[in-house]
Image (cartoon, rainbow, N blue to C red; front, side, top):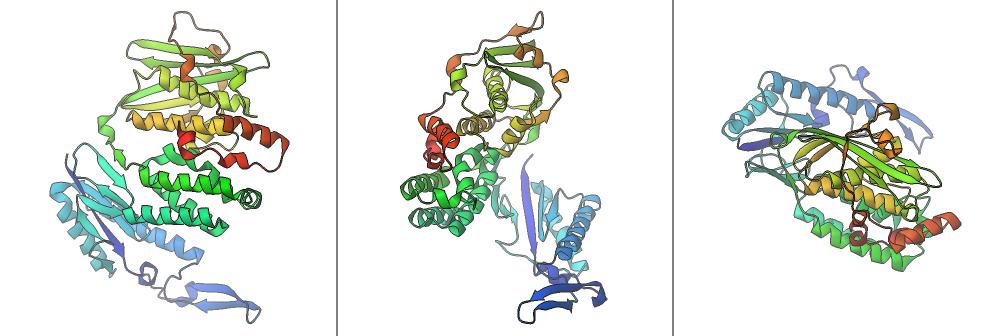
Length: 415
């Protein structure tokens, strides 16, 4: 099916919602000059007031409901932006219906690009969407946004100020969530720490290290590839991957099991203690189990919807958010997991399940069910800690100042 899209942007959206009784919309603010609160009645929604967000969301949800139920339009209003996708042959009529509805409600909207538009290539919520191919949708941010981010990072490298770094982080998050989703978050973990007021003062003293790191991020900002999003109808049925790990002073082991078209298969791998550097060792092993499971079962996972089950909440949360705060090595594993899912055109749902309900629990405890076929794990698949990660663990354990956090360039962290 060939798709196309249309979008509209309301003009001065808050001011279009009028209160018949101003007594229902009283806004208070602190006056520094008078030293007291002032209360003002407004005939329209006021920008910055919490109640304005509530009422406008109710209005935009109502617009979405009308268009979906009465106009059979596929999409929604996000605050003042209406974004809809339809088959190419009905997109023009869908846009006319949307304009007709807004006109009947006396809502004014932009009718020309870039605020509004219709066609195979449109801009939605700041991102550019290309529907010209029937098998995938290409999503990217405008090129001027990339140039802006690069200039901000170079500026921050020369003069690393907290405000500039926070702007860099905001634009970088927008870039990564638009293009590679969680696959890129682990590469900006150092930027998260640099913008933390608790850590920034001591880290910014190491100007050479910070400069090298930020210049590496500026190159990454220009090299991130657009997202090529395949519709879910091209993905095969859901596969269930259950993983688990155990750790003691004498042994560490990961295990996993998966139901496939050829039956149930599993893996078991004894992890050398020499590569377990994280303080949260069981969390690291649980994340490692997910990565090993994806690699071991790679012949079954391409273009699949994967349901990955674990009994470790911390490990699942790190994978879902896209980076780990506990250790650079765990952080890199999280990135490798998302890289694998993206590179194999798969999609994943991460789920917590209690140990007694996790079928991989017995494998991690060296109790393999009878008849279960175990697939071999090549130790070369397991990423070993880099020297930067080893140094980071040592500094975290022995000092309050840890500049090694920034020594891993984005390229090194992604390998």
